[in-house]
Image (cartoon, rainbow, N blue to C red; front, side, top):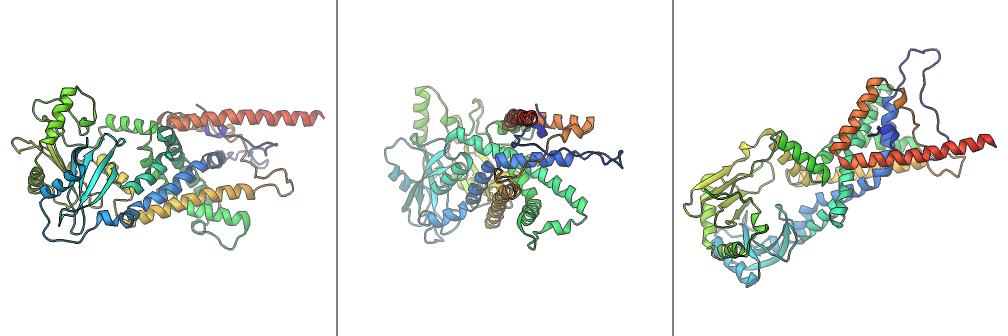
Length: 494
């Protein structure tokens, strides 16, 4: 594994020499950490900046998508309020009439959480994609069907939010597109950490940290752009580190390592068990898996035999146990060996995600998981994901996320503007500024070199796309460095 200082391509032309001791103070330590981080921050910003910019802009759109969703789909989500809603059975019967004889099977019901909201009756449809369901929206006061839409994931995102989500996650390119977001999330934290350390080093040198917390509007050109980039960056640094850490959990390769780490440390989120006595482990989404045709037929028969009135009974039983919020999801048994589940789906603060399982024969509680049972790590993970998605504090969360994402996008743009503003004014052939010089790591003590190498190896193994990109940077850097030396030799020979 290579070190960060040697993993970035160099611009053509001779470089300035690295820092050296002053002749009158030969015992003065040679600064190496600042130059090393400056080089890393510069090149990571230049080369990964486009990915971070796209992720930031699409993330800003996703942050406000829950509010947009309420406006765009108001006809499906809102109905005249009623204080005397019909039983769920009547609402499910209305939804089943719309479904008719299709292959869709009833998979969940989300009762109207508040007066004026609609009930969602959800179906597994083999014609839909992974994690997608068909949702029938029913007026709880009249049992009138007011909508028929595809919803995505446990959040129940409607088509607009789903489109924005997939744009943010994969640019609508599937698993290949997800590499872009993983690269952006992985490097965002590194760039933020390096920039924060550089800000601290500069603040110590200038001894005016307060002045660096806000942009200086009196300056012109490069100094003014840098002032905006640095001041916004220090305020956004914590948010950038947070978005990076939580974003990695959804990634393909780094996310898999996060899952393994959480399992090794017993930091996993507990889930209610739907397994009944004597049955093999099924899991929440077992009905999506394979099996014999006889098993599939039995499962379909079980679904067909579900009495809509049972949903009313399960909701009442859930309220009697621990389900005390309006945002509730009721899941029927996946097969004859599985339990009913009534679970809270409220992601705002305070978090309500209690879940309870009932035996469909005895109606006894077979398992329950309350949020209070979560370990500290599981609670932090739940809050972190909800905060990242803009659901933990509602509209306030969404506004803060949107502003943060736009700030990140602005810093990327300012970074490119500074690169252009640093160009040599007397050399029109050079359209951009020179890169920070090589050699910083050569001035570091042995323990500094060791720490950098160990950090690069550890981060590269845990975040594979960072490791691969570091190798690519090194190859390009070496190639450009060799080209620069050949040009210098030719110039000297001539």
